[in-house]
Image 1 (cartoon, rainbow over the protein chains, first blue to last red):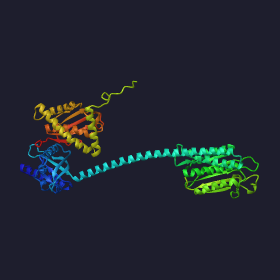
Image 2: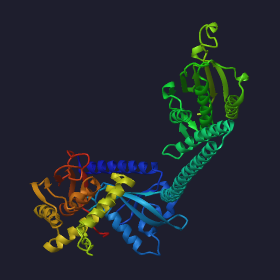
Image 3: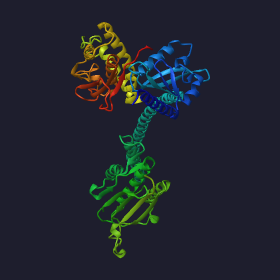
Image 4: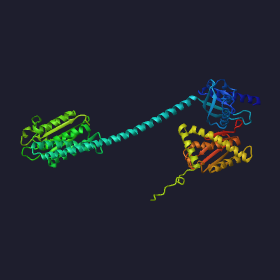
Length: 384
Length: 180
């Protein structure tokens, strides 16, 4: 191949390479230029022309676009370009240039060696310089500002949370203290009623005072449970039943062997716990007093607390006595059942008396002597 | 009544002095960069600093040795010596016309370099710049690095362009320096 042909081939290859680089530049959305290490512009894309104006045209000097007010800017740009000429790996940097409108714009940039200088010094190195749009910086500062705002909000929320947690702890202490004081006050009232019962000679007065004593004791038992370690919004139904039943047995002097308890571990809210304790007190007292035939030995009493579907529950107290018709009840028994009925109605529940286990089977067998048993059932729907 | 002795702040056993402080600072700085912009872009920032450090060190050795350009033997010696001066433990494994292979048993950043691969761009750029400025061309391959968890570093510096290089090899070229 002659020297002339070789020269022609090399020139054609260089032209093709340059056209390829120009095509890549045009495809880039950000301003991009091919420059020499001293800042001489070899190629520039339309985005560069739009952003930097006529100063970005090939043949011009990029350093001529550096703002006049800071003479060091041009020197820094030349140093950066020189370093970029040392490696194909892109180096990040920053540059301030005058835009098409004359205003100074600060760009982040990325520069990398495109073609090294010719060993014989006939051609200088060429670099690809991409000017990353200012929008990125603005967006970054917006993100940074949002992050600062979010951090401030998180700090404020944490502060509020700490204040609320303090307030909640204080409230819990106060509520427990309140329950404690109520329980002490009730205990004091019970003591006063007991003293009054012992002082009176009237049997009727003794009985009435004893009933009130037992009811207040039952309410006090609930408050005692509420100021303990558990939840402040309710008590465990099984614990309430198991605490209250022995107290009623003791108060009436009844044999503990008569009683059997089956209670599910259900949560009973505060507003239900006190009426429930009163109801259990009444029904259990009633069953222990009347749960045997005339002249017969005291019968057994069964207490059952069970969960129902739909967040309801049922309390049943059953005895082996003769059974009774609530409509026919008289005296304090009637007043006790009235209290139960009233409390159940107050909480949206129901109360019924049915035949107990002792009365199941042939009704004819359940004479006055044998007894039929009574089963008192209080049912609350949706109160757990 | 005498209580227990109160520890003196100035004599407290705290592992802190200027060198440790600066190395930890670089570790945290590199870690922050790697987290915020990613290892690749963080490596770019370290490369900018590495290129500047390479210029200073290259100029200092050439001035001290009173030579316009360092020979290949001098380049290899300088690379080992500059690391020795900053408490690295580099040594020449192989030196030919085509390449210089260096090993290293101790990183100047010490234990602080572990998990910070972007800091290796300091070595790549300093070595690459010095080799390329003096010998015309360098392609640096960080074959093994303590930063990435290897027990020792192994660095291959190709002195002639070749197609047979690892993909993560970085090429360096002589700059005419007319701008600087």
